[in-house]
Amino acid sequence: MEKKTVFSAVQPSGVPTIGNYVGSIKNWVAMQDEYNCIYSLADLHTLTVKQVPAELRQRSYELLALYLACGIDPEKSIVFAQSHVHQHAELTWVLNTITYPGELQRMTQFKDKSRNHADNINMGLLDYPVLMAADILLYGTDVVPVGIDQKQHLEIARDLAVRFNNRYSPTFVVPEPLIPKVGAKIMSLQDPDKKMSKSDENVNAFISVTDGTDDIVRKFKRAVTDSEAEVRFDEENKKGVSNLLTIYSLFSGKSIPDAEKEFEGKGYGDFKLAVAESVAAVLAPINQEKNKMLADKGYLQSVLKKGMEQAEYLANKMIRKVYKKIGLIEP
Ligand code: TRP
Image 1 (cartoon, helix red, strand yellow):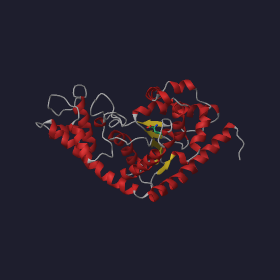
Image 2 (cartoon, protein in one colour):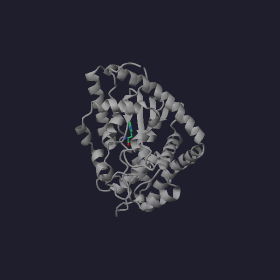
Image 3 (cartoon, protein in one colour):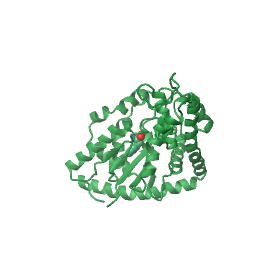
Image 4 (cartoon, helix red, strand yellow):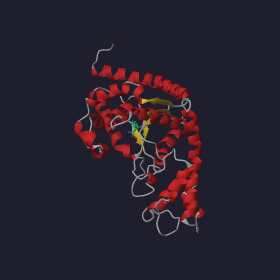
């Protein structure tokens, strides 16, 4: 049977947290053998909020190095920068002509970002989900692993695929979201009612994948728990401790019941230190590898070039098909 196609992307805006890592990149790595995987740096998406050009460029290299250090293998998967394949912008234009402003204005992320960037509510911010739909539909994508916050955008991609197929003829695959059960839900260390976010103003609320061991230990030591001193999973009454148990389980590979047993009769101090150590043990080698790769821009550029060529071959076939169906003269 032919392998299914997976597409996903992360924006090179800010440093990913451990929530982003377990919720996305870690799963991408695991999918590489079973699927044809296409992983992109969503650099065009970052332009919807103000960027400092030199920082954007550096963060794009950093994110690429992180992908590779985490185990995304350019021999198995297509890894490329969205801006290197012009068909993404072209398909966005075509899809714009079958998208209604109202369906974009009601997107939760558009509303949130309009609030947070009130001085810069631009057309790109509104059109963001259409560019994302183009990313996905260009490659005949079957499955899109994304966080729960992207589910609405995926529904737009599905709607646009169906709308185009009905208006012309079957062209696009209607993609399915794949939303992880755990890890989609790593919460803030300071306020376990909120999702862990890389843009939280309190740096103690999140662990960045680039945090060193000292920072990791310090942040976990300060993590909000409760006054019970019992390491027990109870998402209703013990949100902070449950979040730490989830993190411990994901990073140590132990089950939550085993972890509960391990810390029976021990205080939160020991527990927090063990959580910190389990996270540091995963992140330290990733960062070492990432820094090694960052020092070799030539290698990173060669990965992007190969990815661009592979992606463009596929994207070009799709955009030609689309242009032909809508009645544009073939060149
Ligand atoms: N919008 C996604 C995010 O911020 C990133 C993204 C861009 C994406 N294009 C995509 C994710 C296509 C999945 C598929 O998380």
